[in-house]
Length: 241
Image 1 (tube, rainbow, N blue to C red):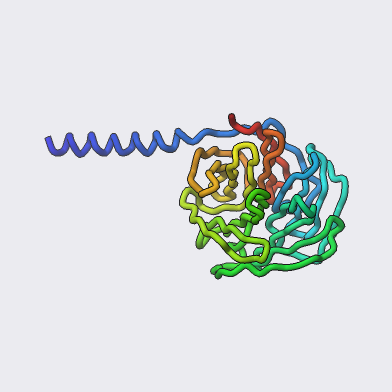
Image 2 (image 1 turned 90 degrees about the horizontal axis):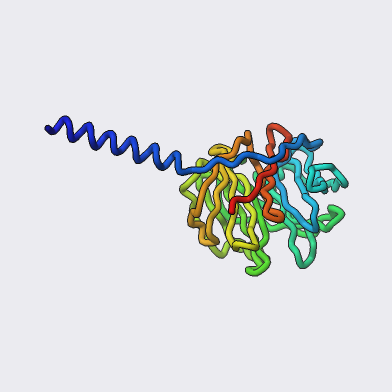
């Protein structure tokens, strides 16, 4: 009898694990575009255009919504892992991962200011990653990739005002703010997944994506754009209802 009960509980446990795995939906891209951009590592949108930053050459690329390069904005920085635009000034903010800094540039790439973000990281490639600007809070949201996986709320003086730990993915590599739902969309390179969370970091739903080395994400007009660093591709998904 004891043996039977053990087998029953084991079967239930396996079913529970399988059920949790199967509950994660899969998003299929509606379009995959080859980018003429080396190692795209971050993406944002503004005025019906995409802005993609390259980790390899530190250039910001203004593209159409189809990924066609319209303008190249050179910067003097490297190891760039994220990009956003401060809407009131229309200035760029980019992330230098290894130096743990946020860098502000004007629309032509001229340096404006730099903010050092406190914190320690065990490896230069496991620090600051994605960034987005939340206008209603007048704050930046910055991801720390892993060890620890964190969402950092940062004010305009570079001070961390809040920290939220993420436990639902192997790492975090990109983030954007959805103004319609007032939620975050977070992409994980290692987990090959997109996560929709509340502004408090609570997981709402997760989605598997067929993207190798996903490094950046942005929402534009109910469409999700994801860039692949390794494949130099832009993946376009329909945002789930």
